[in-house]
Image (cartoon, rainbow, N blue to C red; front, side, top):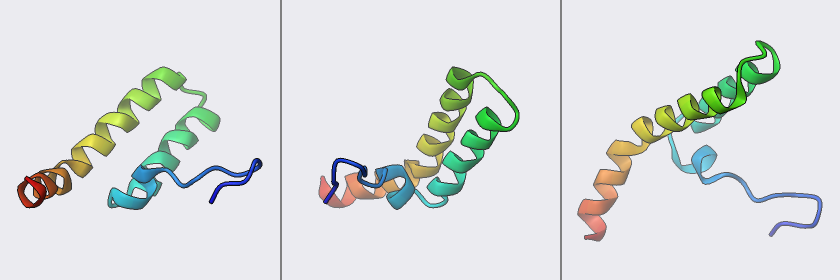
Amino acid sequence: MATPSTQPQDAARVYVRGGDQIIGKGLERIVIAGEDVAAVWADVKAELEQTAAPTVELLRQVEG
């Protein structure tokens, strides 16, 4: 349960294998390398979607 000073965990960090590292690398690119935020998050989104695709497909097969 979230309190006013906390947020629930991102689903991508929990359910996508390596999601935490993918997001962390994106944050490093923004904060340390000074890359454009929109461009980095577009890359992060694409990588998360690609990484999650097999799991999403399996869930579709199981869930219908």
